[in-house]
Each structure stands twice: as C-alpha cells, then as structure tokens.
Image (cartoon, rainbow over all chains, first blue to last red; front, side, top):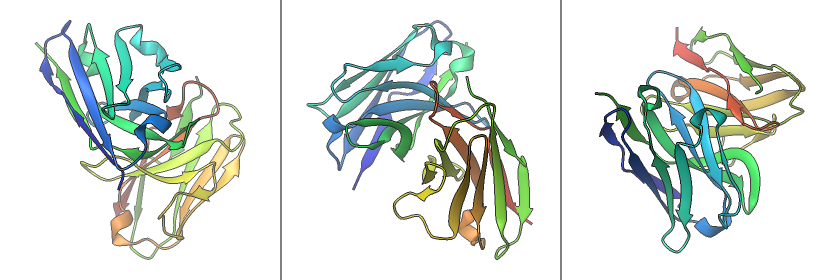
Length: 122
Length: 107
C-alpha cells in the first residue's frame, strides 16, 4: 500500500536550517509529482512546494522567497525539503503529499504522510 | 491568489443528520475543487476531486457539487467517524489554495 513517512523535524532557532525527508513506498515514486504542504498549529493548510517526477519542474509558494529548496532522489524513493533562514512563522507540521495522477500535475493530493513538526523558537 | 471562504466555521449536528458545507471562491475556478477531511492528529484525506468526483474508497454518503465560485460538500447521513474538520482546495490557479476549514462537531 502507498506509504509516505516524513522525518527531520525538530526545534531550531530563528535563522537556522533544517532538512526534511519523506520516504515513499508502495507506488512508483518516480512517476508522480510530489508536494510539501504545511499546517501551523491550530491553523489551516498551506501548500509549500512541488516537484515534477524528473526534477525538471519546481514551484514554491511566493511567501517562501527563496528560503526553501525541494528536491528528490528517485533511486532512493526520497523527497526532501531544505529549509534555510527559518522564522517563527515557519513553525508548522510539514506533510509530504502525492499528486493525484501518474505523471500529471493535477494539484490534488491523494496520499499524505503523517507529518513532521518543525518548531522555530529561540 | 484565489481565496476560498468556507462556511460555517463550525457545524453542530447529530449522527444520522445531513451535513452541508459551503466553499466560495474569490473568482471562478470552473470545477477545479477538492474536499478533504482531517481528524485530530491525522493527515488530511482526499474525499472529492473536480467538485463532484469521489476519491477511491470514499463512501457514497459523501457528495460534492458546484462550479464557478460556489461549491457544496454534503454528507447525507452522518456517521460517528465523520466528525472532523473539512477543507476545500482549488487547483485552478497557481498557487493552489485551501479554505480555512469547517469543523463538524457532535451536537
């Protein structure tokens, strides 16, 4: 069955960096667009970034202003999110999510991981 | 950026009753709308895509309708496991955006 498992979250000071990973299994990872979506404590959902199956198309939320970098390793079935210059407002649970359709950017998310909590505080 | 406004913020109903959720877009999004269910401590679950298509494994009591700017999610007869937060999401325009959610609570 499809499984997504995030790791790498934790407590970091403002201005610090963190790298999140998402391990995928149960499907052909190399054939799907993948996204990161975050949810601040007690708040709604915010799309962060997506990456195409072959790494050729990448997009970020405007609010991130170049601080985050998404990447993937299809040989290892891993998705990454490198987060730099972290701010208090980046505090959230970060989910990785699979796009709905094979080799197509639908913008819908049919499988999600359980999330990893990133806390930015001094 | 397209803003999705969900109403009501909270819906208080009893098992067996009918639940109706509203999602209004700040501009037309055709039928490019999804609905998700999120329970406490869990990831969201895709219920409906393209306004009215149930995702795989979603019970028939969940249905979606609408196009343009006004959309509705209906649960025909509430089961105990349906009490959760529901989000709408549009993928018509980049960036895809989510509504603020409607909490369905037990009355």
